[in-house]
Amino acid sequence: MQENENNTNLNVTFDKIDHDILLVKLSGKIIDQATSNELSSRVTTELSNDRNHLILDLSEVDYINSNGLNSLISILTKTRTQGGEMVVFGINEKVQKLLLITKLSSVFTITETFEEAKNQFNQIKQN
Image (cartoon, rainbow, N blue to C red; front, side, top):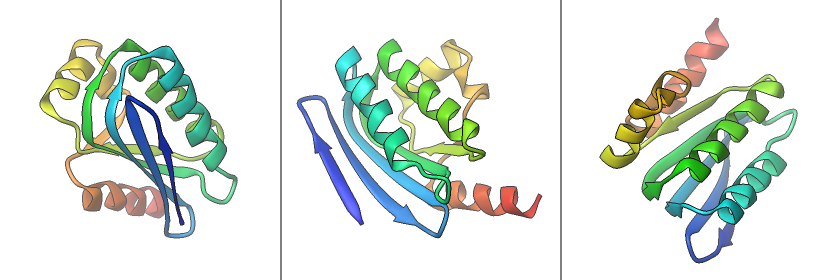
């Protein structure tokens, strides 16, 4: 099942994988407060008690600013509040530098590929 949310800055696609993992694919820019609020709201609405883990695909995100970072932190907090975890993959060089500068790279679990992200959940489930 997939759903799209389109606006001028960001495209969001939801894809439910496995029995407890939600894949969220983002493309575009996360730059304004309205887009960030909408993103946080949509993702937290899609999370449920039986699907509480989240893989966030940022491979097509061109740019993110403080509004976008706040949105990612909000989504991470909601995911963990529901007993889940969030893994981010596909971060471009600009976004990676921003995460390093803000020291948020240590807050998020980051992988390079979708397969690596999915494997993170296999490790979590084994522990």
